[in-house]
Amino acid sequence: MENLNKARELVQNAAFVVVVAGNGLAKIEGLDLLGQEDFEQSFPEVVQKYDVHSVGFALDQHICSWSEKWQLWSNLIQKYSVDYHPSQTLKQLLQLIGHRPYFVATSTFGHFFENAGFNTNRIFNAFGDWTKAQCSSGINHGLRNCQNVIQKIAAKKPDEDIEKLVPKCEVCGQPLEIHMPLNDHFYPETEANTRFRWFLTGNEDKATVFLELGVDETSPQLREPIERLVAEFPQWSYVAADFKQENLLPEIQERSAGMNADAASLINSLVME
Ligand SMILES: [Zn+2]
Image (cartoon, rainbow, N blue to C red):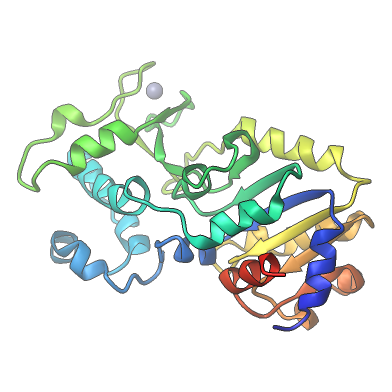
């Protein structure tokens, strides 16, 4: 692997770790947003009903009935997040971070880091978390954990009526919707975002390594803005699993390692001395 020694050095010398994870990492955790190999086998009713062949397209369907929306969402979330088992990669990542303070900023919305044992106060889900729900009224009435509802709905047969199970907002009584930017009223996790900003501000002059894992074209917000941020603070360094060294910003060339590989191989190589 290109640059492995440099990556090792940057990671070992850091006192703080920031993990920046995109949908390439979700794929390692079993959820390929744009093309799941076993999607058709896993969701024959969804394929038949909507003629879609991936989670991304399924989530993009404009469905009017709340029962139907929740039926679809619950089936997907049950498979990818409720029945989820952490990958070797996430276990090794925890091992690699060790006792160092860390923060995870991620566009993976599948509750993977939480389920893999990362500290929930150290995770910012930039694109939401589909195991939680927000009010559909267009007003921010907070987030609610929906794993119980999801399990109940997913256990029903496709022709069973689930209308009574559709979760409702405790404030205004409107139906809830999954916490993802599926429409123009998405409310980001403000508290987690604030915690993330405080973490960064508190470490501006400290040796901090940013680990890019599986960031791809589905989350451009996690690429260049992060590189630019690293460029601002000389104590910060950047290790990119997926990008080539020559494609990283010129300002951070000396304190970065572009691996041109993938998150699983990078973490595995970093853990194996
Ligand atoms: Zn409400």
